[in-house]
Amino acid sequence: MRNPLRLSVVLLFALAASVCVSPVCRATEAAKRPNIVFIFTDDHAPHAIGAYDGWLKGVNPTPNIDKLAAQGMVFRNSFCTNSICGPSRAVIQTGKHSHVNGFMDNGDRFNGDQQTFPKLLQKEGYRTAMIGKWHLGTDPQGFDFWKVLPGQGQYYNPIFKTPQGRETVEGYCTDIVTDVAIDWLKENAGGDQPFMLMCQHKAPHRTWMPALRHLTLYDDITIPEPSTLFDNYADNASPARFHEMGIDGHLNLVADCFGPELPNWNPTGKSMDRSGLKNLERMTSAQRQAWDAAFEPKNNELRKLALTGKELVRWKYHRYIRNYLRCIKGVDESVGTLMTYLQENGLDDNTVVIYSSDQGFYLGDHGWFDKRWMYDESMKMPLIVKWPGVTQPGSVNTDLVQNLDYAETFLNMAGADIPADMQGASLVPLLKGETPSDWRKSVYYHYYEYPSVHMVARHNGIRTDRYKLIQFYQFGEWEFYDLEKDPDEIQNEYSNPDYAEVIAGLKKDLAALSQQYEDDSDMSLMSKEWQVKVRDR
Ligand code: SGN
Ligand code: CA
Image (tube, rainbow, N blue to C red; front, top):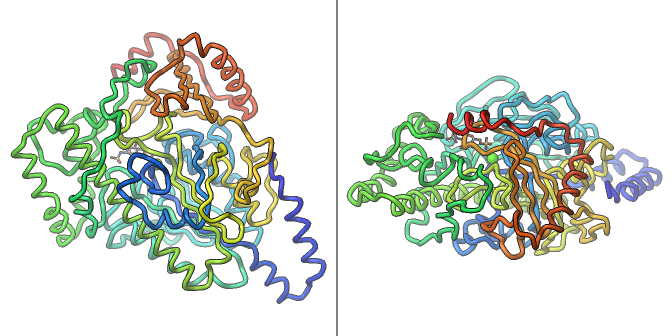
């Protein structure tokens, strides 16, 4: 299955090289290798993209991304291997699972000396650039140009890091990243050398701060609520009940929602983070004025209403989802700007544009924000690819694909060899509409960051097109879902005898996948004392 097209691509290049020896001719051949514009965001759930059929589709949150989808291919069954920021990015850099590339949770630092796809593309003669959120701890390697946000980055007046040092740039982060990307294209695109540009936004990451021009967007429309907003985790394995990512208990009215300090606003609550409040302090007075003018009247209303209980949860949900979608509006405009630039500069025909995000996100689904769990809302990643002349416009792919496949895909697009130690498979055949008959029938997942912010227990699992089996191995507990009957994953059928055979088969397949990917990480059961200690920390 690995790299099925490589031979033909290599033969084609060999043939071209043998009949075409002049420098001009060689340059022309090189120019035919596609450019790659890889737009990547943070925490953008597929169900907040119009081109996916989520419950937010009707809000029309992403007209430009939808346009990209109409011109390319939408992957509906695209998954991450480990639903958290740094790990997802490290998997993409290397084409290897977290336990192999060494970046298992956000506390790790990426070993940039290892093999990565940008380094390999550089060797193939690609010009490479990385702009925006990086979040891998160490400095980027394999790029002719990089300008990144240190750590999580800030929405307003962010600091950027380059090989020359740090600088603060006034403005809104999504817009600045787009401007830097366009400036880089102006200098570097269109010559003999193909290029690969990674344009990576902080948005729509917590603490959701929209651009000033979007602060009141969606004020006049009703945003739907997820059907699982008040999930009580009745039949989940126990870890779900010990989460710290509830709209109710953990989404902070002031620090996350920029709402008023009601008597119950919970200033010291668990998983409280002040990064948004600190960013308000970084604003210029004009920015701050515009911000307050947009939120204060609505906050005053809440002061008067003094909501509590479910009504307050609903208010927080609506403030959260609006700000999240407003951040996405900024991202969508960035996609539009980049696409227009490519078009107006004759780069459109020979540039692959990819839109993706490090994982999905809970948009009030199961009562949550954040990610990490293996449930579909955060295990799914958006993946839209427009490759003129290759992807059928408006096509939809439902094969099981993962971020594990990106490095291989980019190398394959460039006609480069795919190293044998990469663990995914090139998506190029799928992009051509020719899925190999032996394409994978299941994907492997493993999340590690525990105990940590949001308190999601370690788990691994397997997902097929119909079923999902999750193992919270430290607690010796399992969950099983029949996604055809229960797409929202609210009915844990692990103890249902009707599924006993299916579950036994999945357990075997899970063990086989773990072995295939050489997952040697510690999956031991923890003592009862430890379990209680962690939960009551
Ligand atoms: C921060 C966030 C968390 C988030 C982690 C990891 N708090 O701690 O909500 O889960 O990052 O996110 S915040 O208030 O500072 O935003 S990740 O995208 O980097 O994995
Ligand atoms: Ca993320």
